[in-house]
Image (cartoon, rainbow, N blue to C red):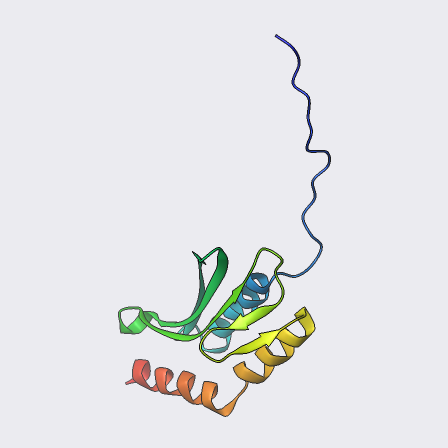
Amino acid sequence: MAAQTDFWGEIAPTVVRTPVAILREQAALLGTKTKNLVEATVYTESYRGAFRHLFNLVVPGLNDYTYNLFTIEHGIGLYPVTVVGREFRFETEQDFTEWLRGFLSSVETKRIVGNLLAQVAS
């Protein structure tokens, strides 16, 4: 039997922060800020050949009540990133992180997290 020939060559991961890595970083920070009364999780699924990441708020003290804060999609190329249902499209990591910073620190997002905190503290 002849030896196998490797046609793949060297393969290395792309050197870029992926959208899901950015989301997971932010998800981890929320639990710390709320003493784990409200946590965030990122659920990833395949959707029509693209990646879809659901950013959910979870309240363990309320039987794991889950609220989808937003959902993003992107193809195998990582960028552009599209926010599902809001028709925002970000061509670069910088554009995406700037939007995410504004969205997570917005009055509306803080109101939602505050309302969840009030529910669990009751």
